[in-house]
Image (tube, rainbow, N blue to C red; front, side, top):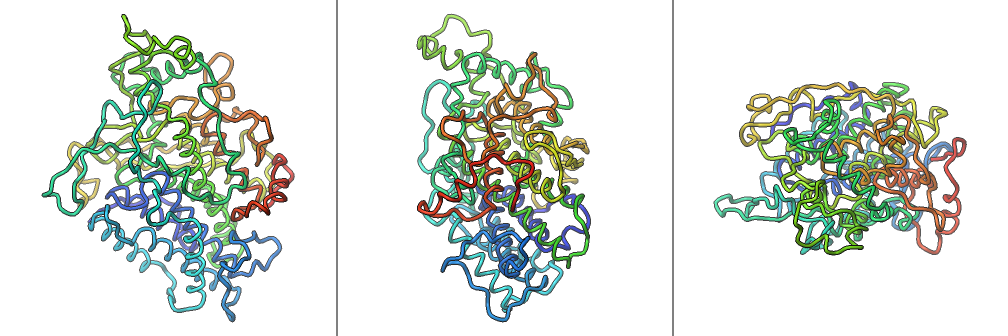
Length: 590
């Protein structure tokens, strides 16, 4: 049985049903990434949380009959597929909470409690048992035969039918994908080119085999978008357009800031080292993926800014339901479009680029001989360079390079989408006056599980049945980190991947927007982005660079349209015309 360390969480949040089931989803996220369960990796885990919260959202607001003009409209359109509310089902908070609970359990059962051929019996049993225990631990009685619960189940089934990855679809599986050889192309990691995987996940005696892992090559082009109104508009500029000088500057920067501690020339500061690990959550044992981290932070912010602790309060429940649906739907779409762009450009990671450096893309095009035999190694190359790497927390494995292309950064895209949505939400709700392209007053303090005083680098393989506190290893120092704004968090989250050495700076942002004229970093609170504020891009407008503006644009789009299901091509004109104007400080609606 897997023993999970307790997750730190603001007191009283789980009295609100939507946040209780959010926490259940986050726990299943770290269980599945500890045992090799379903919904793995950043793409599928963001999709799982998007499905969960969208189902709860519509179960809540459809039960309440959208009775108040201030209520957001449901995601599901009024068509014959949308479940009809049963006659006699009222509009009370208790009934809406029962419907929300029915929706949550249905989604979690579907995603985590259905055995799959590639998932071990141990993982399935652990997930099923954990889910059953958390359902049993829910405070109110769950009347599974009641009309409210059954209505929630029907809503969840419709959401799943519309948006979940179906059996036989590739999802995040790698299929028969193989990297394309050549300079600048994503390739097997030179330090960990293969992993050993069991031939039969339920029978270790059958031995194992070498596998090369590539996460989600078909994901971005095959899965359905949740709520963006302009799928073609969420694209980024070809990184090659930045030119040789920017590529070389990015290479020199990641060598200096992202190298392993024993590498010559590393200038990363202790604070940057802390930030690198703080934001990691690279599918780590007992920790999970970035969408879990961003939800944990959102819980802190929601707790700090809640109006009441009364779990029966209609307005407070509705706020939590809406906020977490908006943020998780934005991250679900961030996963789709970030992975579409990743496999469009197929850019190698710094670990490959530094070791095999031959100059910039334009220089190579001008002189193909640069890719051939050389008399001397280029002074910017280092065939033995090692990155700090994504940490294999709570294990004794080596740090690694994420198994998918670099450009754009998934971390940067997910974090920007989630935090921008929270910024937009609280800007409207609280009448805040900040510019959506600059710093905000929404601060928070959070302890990352990467640096919580319990997580560690083990001296031996992890033992699932023992508390992590009883397993020998180097303990990660507990760090309580304070952020003055969500804007600062967006950029530190993006910078952190450079400090790990797993991303180029342009994977996250355009250096022209993120650096001052001397080439040093500006304070994140001072960074203002350009050209990314329209929900739909105008013809001829320059595409943005990297994951930060990609995530910001996705959040802006979904917020502007009110988070509705994509409509058919014949009926999109009015909605897109409405969304084309820039989001202003005065025009917001849910």
